[in-house]
Structure formats: C-alpha cells, structure tokens
Image (tube, rainbow, N blue to C red; front, side):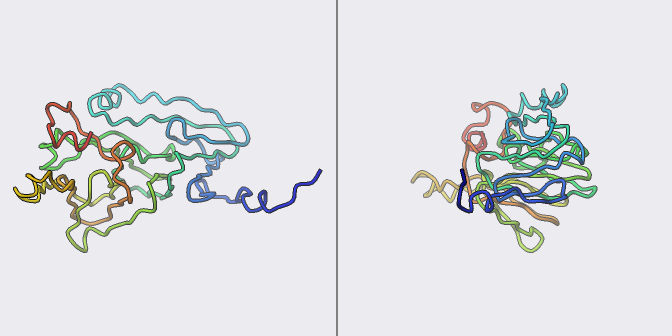
Length: 241
C-alpha cells in the first residue's frame, strides 16, 4: 500500500545540530545530547529517544513568592537522550542565546531554557509600580539558550532611540540595561466620565536595550502579575491581575 503526496516530505523533521532549533514558527526542537533543559510544565508534544520528565522543585523561596505574587511559573526538568519537541497552544516561538547576560520575562511567555540558566521571580523596581500593589516578572540570567512564546509576531523596540511606552498586557520581555516605570494616563476628566480609554496603565521604558512587545493584550494569556489582592489594588490592581 502506497501513500502519495507531499505531506511526509513537506513536514519532515528538520536535521540540525543546534541545541534549540525551530521546526516551524510554533514548534521547538531540543537536542537532548547537550544536557538537561527546563521546560514549561505540559509543553511536551512529542519526543524521540529516551527522554524523562520531572516536575521541578522550585524551592521554598520561589514557592513563597509564587503564592504571594500569583506569578505562576511551573517548570519541569527534561533529561535523557534524543529529540524533544515543545509547544504552547500554537503560540509563536522565539529563540535567543544569552552569553553571561540577563532578561526579564513575563512568566506566561517562558517556554524553555538551558539548565545552565538561573531563574527566579523578582519584583520590578519602579516608582509607579507601588500604586498597583507591585509588579513581578521572571529573571533569566547566565549563559545558555532561552525560548519564549508570543501571541503573534512581536516587535523589538530600541528604548534608547526614543521614549518608549507599552501596554502592560502586551510586554513579553526586556533586556538588561532597560529601566521600567509605570505611567498612569487617565485621558483627562472628560475621558474618565465617558468610561476611560482602556489605556490607563502603561509601562514606560528607558535606558539601553530592547523591549519585546506582542500584538496581543490578552489578560488571561499574557500580562504581568500584580502582588496583593484585588481589593487592595483597586482599579489599577485589577488591570494587572
């Protein structure tokens, strides 16, 4: 029995020697010969060879911060040999290599990273963030590969070229050297009376480096986390919850 058509040639696995490689825009291939990786819990879609998975013990410090901040970063340790394929609800995937550097990432956008990368949940130091009850992100630091997801193709904005502002729900990550503050823009009393613009809370960036923004403002699928409960945060806290 013979099957005709280009299905099994057009979508055949790509042969690559890179530790992290894209099979397409929405599917990541990890070569397990290069050692263990940390991956988002439940992101495995397939593997070939002998790959094992273990839910990572995040440690009491990160467990406490996760409970307080609501920044849910659930990772699993992947080890063994062969090829591992990862995805997250058909989101776009981007790969970068950190060389003794650091990035600050929205926890929901983290897909996978080399075991050599150190990670932690950190409070964003910003003057305006105190008005929202606090902003939290995931810091990734060291040398190794990192894969993040975005809802649609993002844009990388050079914050040194001009004052840069973005919707908190759309910001995916920013590089080291970038400073962030929170800007409150009510649109004036007339706009507030008419129900507001929907753009009240903005993230303001400066310094040197890049901020990555996705073309999505989904509250449930993106957005940075606010510490505290809704009652203490009020309207501003709800915008980040």
